[in-house]
Image (tube, rainbow, N blue to C red; front, side, top):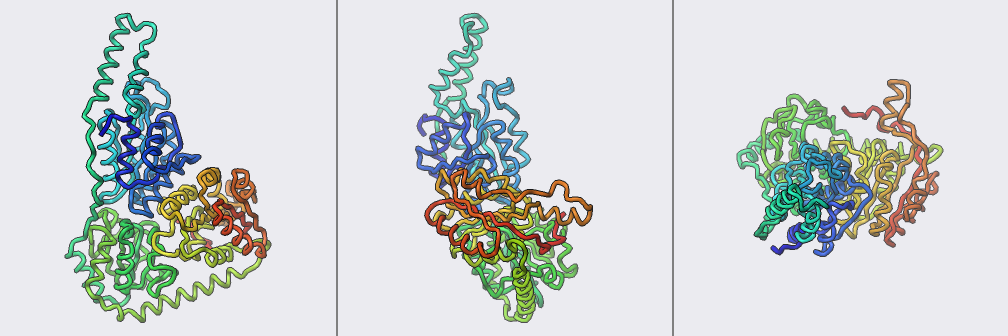
Length: 578
């Protein structure tokens, strides 16, 4: 590898590894990375907050199976990413953050934005290291990419001091005058000697070509564990399959996983990134009354699903049921409820291997019919609730209208509490890897970043953001980003002038809505001020024309925000999780 500056060397590794976009917010510490990325053909997408860059890298990784990459500057540039880093870690998403840092020779001496970044980020990353020699930039970035995908995926962080990133000649010029007017004194000569010696070590060769990025190794469950699971299912009368995000980590094989689930014939509930795995409608797909099904089930298969708060720490599952857990993490598989059968390995591979055992799916027809009838009953209830009229727009009717209008290739991004969760009940993801939501960490603010990453992964798809009005405040400024980069998202803000999910229970239990009240703010006007298209809807009659106009504007390449005034609802009363 040539002695080009460090940014160019990093960019070449990214380009050679199939990375097509770099998400960033500029800073003096990382300028060579951005220029190098552009010169090597990467699309550089600069945003207005570093968290957005990491959320975007996270989404791109989830939708493609290739690590997403973000570059942020030193100090506050990295501190601003911590929530997004932790979100990716808990979501088991493979991404790499390239973090700028103070010059190596000034570390710990009060340099601009110099903090202990390793200590800060280490708890939230799968692996982190600092680059102190220019020759190590490419090999360590390759290691960061490989580590992010291996085993249980997660974010990695590569700290790159600014003097390692710039060309050697530039850095030697910087340090050549570092001793100032006293450079001929004894102290000045000692400092000059020290700096030359430091730079000689930092830029010592050779600059080796890193090996090509290997294919991600997918941990296979043992045949014995798969056979044990098949035996338990063969005896089952009322089996239930829960498929979570971890089952679709290998994006290239997602269709094979969907075929496996269909072959198994077990009534199936999908969560997280697995939503949409079976398409919009499937006989096996159940969407409602999951808790009741789990309490009646005699065999429960958890494919990449932990027994955390979402399953009431395992208490949703029948105490006498056989639990089969397939998971890359044995700790997660054993969390709160020890499984009867543990298949340590990739949940998607487990489902494929299990489907080859020829299980008697026709035996469960009556059980499937029972669950499907409950689903139909719940859908009828939602239809009835969505027909209720108030002063403005019924939130269930809004979600029904979006579901009817959205294109077949749409990607849905949900960002919010009550409104986003309501949408998850109603919207039917169009297919595999076309749904993104805050996830297990419950992180608000993912919307703009996830939409940006979704556009990079699915450039021709219709990308929708469904914002709660509280969550919209986190990333509304990114409409500037959408406009500058011509990212034609359709954002819909469910505007009920409150943090509804919190207000509903807080007011009922404590008798005070303090801290939960908002305004019917003009989010559409903000979008227009940032160069986008803003549309306001205050009545049901305005809704359909507004959605049609939004889609037309997006097809023309313009980002759109539809600000919909909502009526209050108790549809999700008592749904707060702990």
